[in-house]
Image 1 (tube, rainbow, N blue to C red):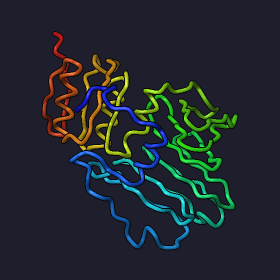
Image 2 (cartoon, helix red, strand yellow; image 1 turned 120 degrees about the vertical axis):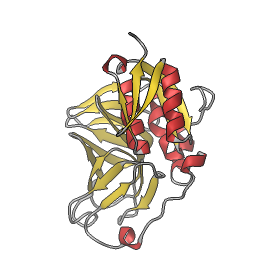
Image 3 (cartoon, rainbow, N blue to C red; image 1 turned 90 degrees about the horizontal axis):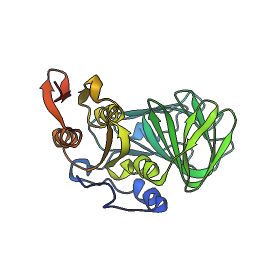
Image 4 (cartoon, rainbow, N blue to C red; image 1 turned 60 degrees about the horizontal axis):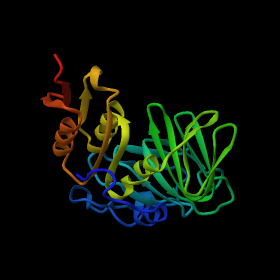
Length: 250
């Protein structure tokens, strides 16, 4: 675990490393791609298991996707030949190859459309974060444009607010095996750690909005949870279903 700010990297560097490197001791296992993944079939059904490494796969049209642990990616039949619309649950990084159909990703009710680019989509409880590593995308029904080196919080109608540099680092660090949280509410941190590790982390209601700034780089789940408890001044309890962060206040 390293404090935020001790590491710095450019978005372009993150794009290069995201498809080649899984950092941290707990996440150095190289994801494998089966023959079924690479076969010329007409639908996409991919997942990255909770607690496993991020998974990188080349899709049938030559585009590449890296899925965060606990994430799934699906499409209807005809992907590549008739359309390139993907349904995402979780976090993913896409590097898109040009094709005859627009490359589109829908997560929750937000539609992100590629304009020859590499980009990250991260679903959150309060919206969808989109960060453009290369090129540009259009988002939402208003078709707001995000360009290289920028990011935004997006809803169905389009861009809500731009992301600052800290938020963009947080959104693009995970393909390297790092989890970066910059002043994010504890409930969102717990939700993402639960998905990433495959171990449920519950948070007392009184703690949910407490801001958290912390970086994890390959620590085991119980170590991450313990560090998080220390960071917010809470107690960590083991439960039959996982873990609980309990307030120390009377």
